[in-house]
Length: 336
Image (cartoon, rainbow, N blue to C red; front, side, top):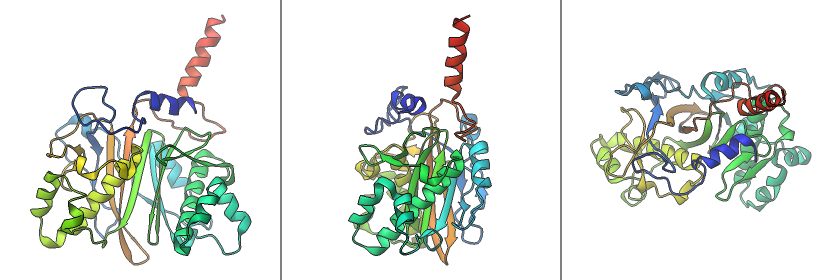
C-alpha cells in the first residue's frame, strides 16, 4: 500500500464502514457536497450552470470539469491530463462499439484483463462480457495516459467490498461504470472518486422501486415536480447515490434511503433522510447529460478531497509525492 493511500485510510475516509452523517469532526464520512450543478440537456450536453451558494467555502471549491469523449483508435489524452492538472479530476467516456475487443484477440484479452480474466470467463452473457472487457480497456488506457505507462503495465486490484484500485499506483484513484453502449471512467488525484451512468429513459419512477431509492424528503421533492419530470430526476438521484456509494466503497450495501440529495436547482450536497444537510466540506458532485449513439445518458461523479493536497504531476517518470520529498529533505538535513 502506498504512502498516500495509507494516509487516506488512516484518516478513516476509506474505512468502508457506514458513513456518519452526524455533526462534529472525526466522523467517518463528512457529507456536505461541493462543486457545480450541471444542467441535463440533450441539445447542450456539456452546458454547465455554476451553482449558487451562500457559503464562500462551497463556491470556492474546485469544479470537476466536463466529461471527455474518447475513442480507442489514436485517442488524444491531452484533455485528460489537462483536467487532472487543473481540477485534480478527469471524467472520460467512450462507446462500447469503439472499445470492444476485436474477436479472436486472445493475447489482447489477456493483456487488458490480467487477473480479471477468470471473472470475465464466469460471465455467461456475451454482451456482459463485451462491456466488462471494453470498460477495463478504457479504464487502463485512461489511467496509463495519466501515469505515463503502457496499459499492459497496469493491474487492477479490489478491496473487500469490490472497490477497484491500481496496484502499485496510488497517486490516482479510479472508478468505473457502464450501461448499454456507454462506458464511463473517473480518475482523481484528490482522494476518492465514484462514478455512475444510466440511460436517461430508464424507468425508475415506480412506487415499489421509489421506496427503495428515496429518502422521505426526496420523495416529497419528486412529488412536487410535474409528472413528466419525475423519472429523469429520479435517474439523477440514482446516479448520484451510486457514485457516492462507490466513492466510499459501499456500493449497494449502503441503503439509498439512508442518505439523499436535494433538487437539481440547488448546490449538490449529501443530506440526511429528513433533508437536513450533512457535515463537512470535502465533497464535489457533478451530474451531466450525454448523447451517445442516439441515446441520452445521465452520468454523475462524486469526489472526496482528503485534504492531503493533490498531485499535479501524475506521471510515474517525473512525479514524487510531496510528503516523500519532505521526509527525504528532512532526513538529509538531519545528517548535516
